[in-house]
Structure formats: C-alpha cells, structure tokens
Image 1 (cartoon, helix red, strand yellow):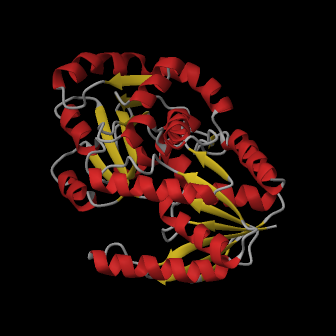
Image 2 (tube, rainbow, N blue to C red):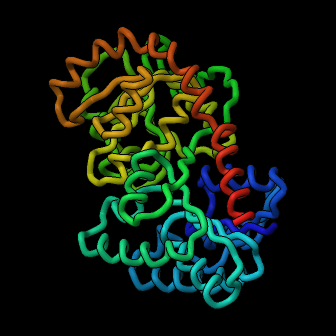
Length: 374
C-alpha cells in the first residue's frame, strides 16, 4: 500500500515524521513524505527506505508577509492533492495538511484512507486569537468527518479531542526516540572548554520566546559551578549568541541532525524544559526534548505545566519550578538540584523502557492495520 506522509514544513528536523516514515516503510508500506520546498533543498530525495517530494516554495526566513505565505500554502495544497490522488492512505501531520486529504477524498479518490496526526492541541496553540480558535475548530470539526483514524501526542490532548468533537478517542503515540544505549559523551566540555566540575544544564530545541530559555538564564545568573548550553535554531539565536560574548558560563551550539542529537544531549548533566503556560497545547503536551533527555539518562527541570509536572512527579525523574519568574522559589530549589540530581538517574531506566519509539511504533502499525481493514 502507498502512503503519502504530508507535512507543511521542509522536512529537515522533523523527528516524528522521520521515525513514522521509517517505521511504516519497514512495515512493508511504500512511503513518500510530501513537504514544501526551501532554499538549497532538492525537490526529490531518496532516503534509505522512503522518498521525499517537495512542492511549492517557502523560505520562512525570507517570506515574512502573510500573502506570500498564503500563496505558497495554497500552491502546496494544489500540487500535493494532485500528486496524492493515486495513494492508498494519506497521513496528515497537523491541521494545515488536513484540507489536502479532504480535496483528494472528495474530488479524486473516495476510497483513500485518511489518518490525522495532531502533533499538538491544534486549535489551542500559542499565538491563536479567540477568533482564530473558533474558526479553526469549525474547520477541524468539518474535516474530521473525512478522517478514518486520529492519533495525537498525549493522553489529556486525546481526552480533549474525544470530548470536543464526540469522536473515537485518538490513539496516543508519543514522540519518543528509539531506545538505544548511548555511551555518555563529553562534547560540550571538550568544545567549549567547560570545567569538569561544572554541572551542565542544557536546553535543546526551537529557540523561540516564552519557552523559558532566557528566563532560565536569568534564574542562574551569578550561581557558581554551573554552565548553561543552549542548542537549537530559531528567532532567539542572534540574541543568545550576543549574550554569550559577555557571559562566561553561557554557550550556544547550532542545531544538529537527529542521527547525532542524542550524542550531544548525553554531554549534559540536566535538561531544561520550562515553557510558560500560555496555551492548552503546551499545558497538556509532553515536549519531544523531555523524552530525548530521558533516553540519554539525564534528569530534567520543568515548569509547572499540567502534564509535564504530572509526568515528573509520577516518575520521580526531575525537578519542578512552579513559576519560572520566581527567583526565590528557584533559589530554594537550586541546592536540592545540585545535591540530588544524580539520584534521579535511578528512575530514568524504567522510563526509557516504557517511553521509547519501539513501543510507539507498535501502536502506529496497529493503527494502520485497523485503517486497512476499515
């Protein structure tokens, strides 16, 4: 069977779509990832066991205007729908690719199966106005009529979808790394000449405002015996690089490819995941970086987001800062972190054995088996 795995990005660092595509191809499916074009990328690539096709063109750094982005998106929908009409299953990643499945199923191929993969609580995301949320909910409710199976990324988000639209509860497939044994590396100490006795805190992921990146920097300023490494890409990159020039214990590293990411992650001692509670999607989700930290065996510091806090408390694998703007709270917690962070390693092995891609892959293939026979 032929699967079109649709994603409205250029498919460079999308670890979830990459893992799903590899797993489905290994499961005997023909897989094509359908992405959008970008500067320096080929419109056709062949991975080990699946293909990549890129339609339209959108450089998010250069295309600032709404009209240029809309034009690229509509062109992507038109070209992707035309290309996907001969496939057996369309796997839609996020709400912005779901209209393509509707067009194909309604006008080209009524027998095509549709899987909707909501990477977040799609209609409760940061930066959405009340009007945006209302309109997106109307759109999502309509498009879900054409969906054969839905999956999402956390238990409370699955509950929300089932309740909101009165649909079958989505299958939860966590965005976890593949379980592998990683020998602890020391890349950051070697590259930045960080003292051996320093405890290294690491933030990895998108460098966007309100994710606690610079807020954590403010919390640790003036504290001795620690270093803070920020690794990723995004809007805050230039500001972070500028800060490192005058801050001896702050370091920046560019994002690295998924195949070597965990080597770098293992070079830290404690992971950082302290987003602000700005939307339901963040409050109810479990970020990818959390599972990446766990896979290399390091505990994490998290903010008081509902699902993050629950996970940490239930598994005893990290530390919770209820208010990332409360310096006094952090100052009280900080000695405990430095004193007992190594003890949190003890529970992480159990978490790794449960929350890994080998287990998530089984759920994914089960979903596809159910869709095929539907």
